[in-house]
Amino acid sequence: MKTLTIFLALLLMNLTGCAGYQTFNHIARSNDTVTAAAGRMQTFTRENLRVTITDADGTETVYAPGNTNIRAVINLYPDPLSNIISARETRVSDPAVWVSNADLINVSYTDGDNDWWQTSVFINLPDNMAIDHADIIMESIDPSTAEVLETATAIVQIVSGVGAPHPFSAKWPWGASFNLTSSDLKALERSSHYQIDFSGSEIPTALSLEITHTAGAAFVVNPSSEKKNIHWTDDGTTAKVLIMPTKPTGFSSLHDLKLYVTGLGVEDVAVSNLQAFDQNGNEIFTVSANTPIRR
Image (cartoon, rainbow, N blue to C red; front, side, top):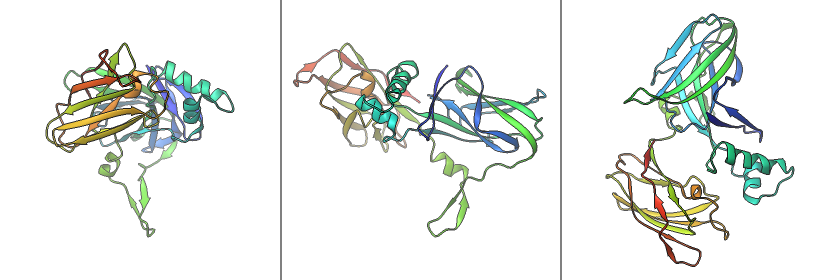
């Protein structure tokens, strides 16, 4: 499985989900919280994630989807001002390898999609683990079919002693500290949403479309603001959307047009009244919207 790891220190490291990779804190004790870099996972959520931890003695601990020991599933994004994003957009960098790395990610790991992220899973380790390495398997499970959708693995080195789950503490502006609740961490996770992609034989310069949905608080999200501007309004059941490129050179791929639609109560998302235009403002008829994918 193709995955991608993006480190905040401008260090890129390409991973595959077929073998085990070290957790962020690669040395831990029983009961400690570890963070596993799962890669660019499309389907991982706390509600559908099964985690299996096997220690050096072969003792297996399984956390079913929704288990409170799966603390959070959060996507991390590169800084939009990071050197690698600048290199990707300008095609110039020093060292030149930053452009090469960006191309490697787009070609080998995201199929040309510039919406990069790293899914990170925060996990409490079980009690009484054997000293030595332990394997962690993370699997998203389809609730209706029990099918495994995506898989990622990690390895953690277990040392002696007994740890404790991380409190994820924060501070109020006046200095007093408090621990984040499960609900606080959930607020950082990806919301349930619809993904809208486009296909066709031409890359348009602009798109106009309507997105219908059940009554709710709709929010149209642009995952690639360095590629496109989105102007949208919503009357409660229909969002009218206009997509324009940010650069005079226009779009380089239909991936650049991808949208997300989310919001409380928003269901049954569908696309209608799609119009595509070329650089001269002429309507073209070779572009279509794919059926929105619920994630």
